[in-house]
Image (cartoon, rainbow, N blue to C red; front, side, top):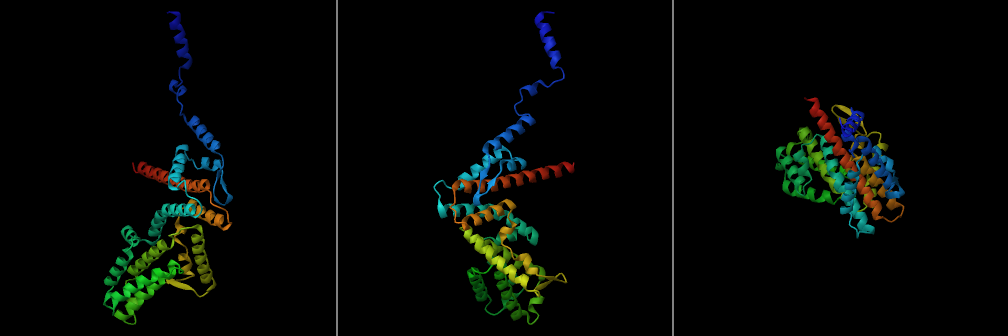
Length: 323
């Protein structure tokens, strides 16, 4: 055997049992993790609103990939215009946060209230709730009431103008309107004669409609004002010891408290924290910086990415468990 052959034999013998491809593999698990940690360490702490920062270690703990963070920042950058300053910048950030959170809140609301998807989607349309309410009145035979069309047009015109009333109170006007129609058509026991489940769904859809309407914010001050209205409403209910409702045959004290929250209460945590920081930031009199605004929006986008990744993982586990 030639010396060259002997050299190759000895060399192959030394690496026997090792994966030679691993020597040239740049993305082995350990190296990939080191690169991920180094990337976020290089970014450092991320400044956000209200003088807060997000530590880079927190992004690492969330198992966020560097590409996911870059994509989240890209989405935020393309949403907040580079020329926006002052109130315009604030309006763009608030609108972006609302647009991203609204869909999640609607889905959670529909699940909690046991509402069909098509009904929820219809209620969110400009004239959708008018159609739903008219259909309900027709199904319950209430369009036989005197001047029903005129009264329907009046209630749909007046209630949206009640800007200082929270959605829960505005739904109360719809309920009073239905009861007045029921008394006219069905007599003294009119409201008790209505289909309870159909009425419950109708009022739930009404609350969704007006809840969506009241979160058309243009500033963090708008959000703070709405939160203030709900806080006062909860305080008033909590102070009324006799305020209870009969639910499924049982009296539940302070039942309205469960409904005295804006739709933003159903936004994911990251969204709500961003809104709270924005309110504090503006209340302090500090100006809004575009970098901080972009970072806030990027954090929300990362939350969306992580939620979707978690959902895909759950679906995969369910799929494999069914095998």
